[in-house]
Every structure is written in C-alpha cells, then in structure tokens.
Image 1: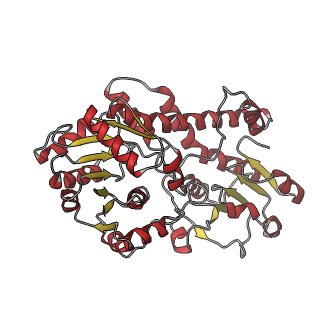
Image 2 (image 1 turned 60 degrees about the vertical axis):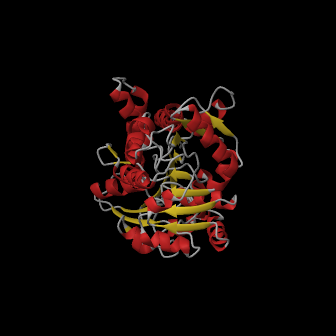
Image 3 (image 1 turned 90 degrees about the vertical axis):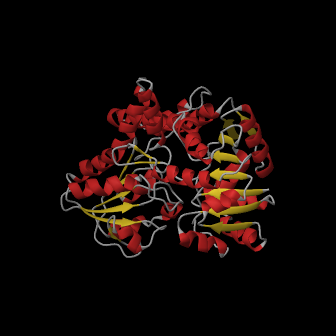
Length: 427
C-alpha cells in the first residue's frame, strides 16, 4: 500500500517515518523544496524529536520513504492520503485557511477513486464535512462513496511523538460508516496503540478541541488560584498538590503563560463554532484572556520587587514556549520581552536551544558564563539546563530578584544566597 503524507513539518514527518517503519511505501509532500531535498537525502529537518533522524535515514535507505513537492502526482499513486498541514489564527484570532485550502486543492487534483483521505490537521467542528469535502469533490468523486474521508486528531507532543503514538489512543471519525471503517483499518496497521472509532467526523473534531480547551481552562483556573494565593500569603502549589490527593481534583499548575501550536489556538476554533450557532462559551473565552495576561503578571512581580523597571537590567531565561523544545509559537517570552521594553528596561535573553542570531530578534543574547551587570532575572522556560544555574554567578553580577515563571527551581537555594525569589503563586 502506498501512503501520501501532505505536510512534512513537526507532525507530518514523524507520521511518514512511522508509516514507513511498518513497511508501507510513503511519499511525503511539502511545498518547501529544501525540506524535500533534506528528506530525500535521509536527513530530518525537524529538530529535537528523539529517534526521528535515525528513522528517516533508515526509511529512505530502505526505499520506504521519499519526498516530493508534487502533491497531486503523489496523491494519484497512493491508496491513502494523510494531511498534516497547519491551520493557524492571525493576530486578530481569525482562522487562516490559506495553507489548508491550498493543500486540499492539490489533493483534489490527484484524487482517484476509493482513496482514503484522512485529515490530522486540527479543524473546527464541521470543517471535514462542510469545508474539506466540497473542495475534494471538485475531483468529480463523492465523499464517502467515490473516495473515503475521515478526521483523526493528532494527539502528540513535540519531543515525545513516537512515545505518544504508542501510548495515546487514536480517535477516528468519518463522513460515513464506510469511511470510518477504512480509516480504522489503516491506523490499526500503521500504529501500535488502541484505535477508537467515534460516531462521525464532527465528534472526532470535537475530541481535540474539547481536550485542548479543557487544558487551557484548567491552567487558567490554576492561574487564578495562584493570584489569590499570592495575595493571601499562602503557597498555591502546596494547596494544589494537597487538593489533588482527592481523586476528584485534577488541578494543573500555574505559570507564566500558555504557548505552542495547540492550547493558545484551538479554543478559538471552538469559539468560532459557538458563534456560528449563537452559543456563548464563557469559560473558554475568559480562560484565553486570563492566560494571555500571565506574562504581564509575572513581569509585575519583578517590577514590584525592584521598585520599577526603567533602566533596570533584566535577564530573560528562555525563548521557547516549553522546556526542551525549539519552538517559539505564542511563547510567553515574546510578551515578557515586549512588556520589559514598554517599561524601558534594559533586557537580555538566553535560551540553550537557540543561537545568538535567532535570539537577537527578541532581545540582546547573552551566555550564562559571561553575564553582564544585572538587577533581576525572569525565568520563562523550564529548560533542564536551568536546573544547574550558578546562583553565585547571578549574585556576583548584581541580581537581587529572581522571578520563576514556571515554579521550576528551589526557593530555598535562593533564600540561602540572599536573592529574593518570587514564583507564580509562591513566596
């Protein structure tokens, strides 16, 4: 069986490698010629994904994986097409379908009868049937009969994709029963996890949106608890951890903000659906506002301790939105830097995942072994490298305040050396 994977990004390339490892002939398609050239050379352009480089190299050398910029041609020779291109929101939180629509039109031009087409791109509820199917039907084939169409949400995280593909059940829902059945049969062959069919593609679409919105709302609640705890003089983490000993309590931890491709984005897909049906979803809307304000809240802690930020010299630790990954999408660090700039602070930035040129667009890059004079530090990203911060070095360059936006480090070590430590919801 030949499989075409459309989109060779941080999700698409691991999927292509996974399918190839099961003995399927896979062609990955991407509009970027350098990506295609890299993959055909047996090299992964996606960084920070354990074992992906080896898997791509092995699959290409074995003849099971190749890449192409000619999506329609690849589709025309495939029995299964999996689409994994990004659907994004713009600065005004409007959904931008440009990439998805373009890729879908390319698929339609090469679509042949009885092909299974599955979208793993996260979509608003109703888009597989209401938006994707009509574009694909320009091929002259009818969805659910002439070709099979299903939605299966990607449920993996960067840095652990192959682990997640083994452990997290695969959800599948088609435009009709035949499409669901075909998609289930495919995933049972290429994955090792449980495959769970749901009633239709709309239900499958909702699975991803509900899950990510739940996470965003839970984080927002934890952040509200943190602000209350800080005002009341108690440790939010102590209270949350103790509360979670009750099996009915599943409170997440507070922090400096929510970043990445998923949690800050997909609630807006759900809100769009709600607006279409005149449903007012209050919690998701408020959660987005609460979490978007957390970088400002953390900067406020720094300002409070320093008695102002104007001309204060601040080090921002972390550009990535999450520890251990080289990704900046909606990272709280961007907002932190903007707020420091607004308050006329002099700020520097460090992140072990990025080189100096990559960091320079967000602030003045520095190395931890050669720090300038500083007044304060704000940690945004929980990189494991920061577990071994040289606190003596920080003290020697003038640091008096350390704001831990991820509640990542040991407060007692800062107390012992005489640096004021402030966490989110902690003293």
